[in-house]
Amino acid sequence: MVGMKNNDYPPEGMQIGTMRVREYCRSYATLEKALENGVILEGKAIRCDENHNLHVRLPGGITGIIPYSECTDDNVREGSREIAVISRVGKTVCFKVAEINCDTVTLSRKAAQRECMDNCISFYEPGDIIDAVVTHMEPFGAFCDVGCGIVSLLPIDAMSVSRISHPKDRFYTGQKIKAVVKTSCDCDGRISLSHKELLGTWEENALKFPAGQAVTGIVRSIEKYGIFVELSPNLAGLAEYREGLEAGDWVSVYIKSVIPQKMKVKLVIIDKAEREKPDFTYEYYYTSGRLCRWRYSPEVSPKVVETVFQNTKSNWIP
Image (cartoon, rainbow, N blue to C red; front, side, top):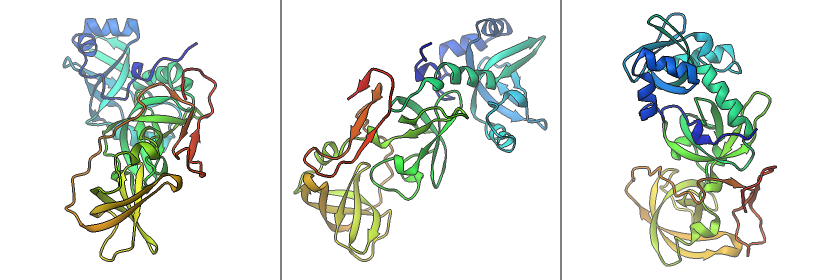
C-alpha cells in the first residue's frame, strides 16, 4: 500500500471552509452520506462538558458530540488526554461521523486520526517535506499539527541555522509552515521534524548580503569575542564586541567581508536600530518532494555541515 499525501490529511482547521465540508454538514441527510462514505469533516468545538465530551458545532448549524473516549488517539496518556481535550474548545477539530440516532450526532476524532496515521503518517520517511501548523511552543521546541490534529515536535535547534533563545523568535501559534520529517514513526506513532533544511544553504543566503552593503539584523548572542547578528534565519555574521547591546536588539551593520571558505560574514555594528515587527514569512527553497542530503556548507569549505536523511523511497531531491 502506498501512503497518501500530507494534503489528503491536512492539519486541523484547513478544511472547515471548503465546499465539501459545508455540503456534508448542511443536514442530517448529508451527514448520513458522510457516515456511509467514511469522510473526514471539521467543525468548531464549542464546549467540553463535565464528562469531557466535546460538543462540536458543524458548519450547517447542527451540533455533534465527540465522546471523551473518541477525542484523541489511544497513544495519548490519560493525564495528557484531559488537557488535550479541554484545549480544543474554541478551535476546529476533525472527525468522522460515527452514529446518527434521531437528532443526536455522534462523532469520532480518534477515527479520523487513526485513518490519517494508517494511510499517511505511518508511511513518512526521513526527508519528506510536509505541511504543518504550529499548535503551541515550549522553550525546547514547537509542537506542530502534521495532520488531523496529530502533533509532532520540531526541536528549537532544528528551526534554523541561526540560533534562537525561544521558538517564539521564529514562529507564532497557528502559523502554517513547511517542515521536513527528521525521523519516521516510532513505536508510539510519533515522528520528529526539522525546518532549517528548507531555508537555504550558506551560499544561497550569503548571495543576498554582498560585502559593502549596510543592512539591519538581530543580535542573537553576545560572547566575549564578539556579537552574532542574524542576517537571515540561516545566516549570521560576527561583529566585534560592543557594550550596551543584548540579545533581541535590532542593529544596523556594515558587511565588511564574506568568506565562503570559512563560512564567515564579518560585520561592523553601526548603531542600534528601531525594533521591527517580527517577520515570520519564510522563503522556502523546497516545498515538496523528499530530501536525500542537504549540505549547508559551500563546496569550497573544508568544513562539511550537512544533513543526511536515511531513506528507502525514490523521488529524492539530490
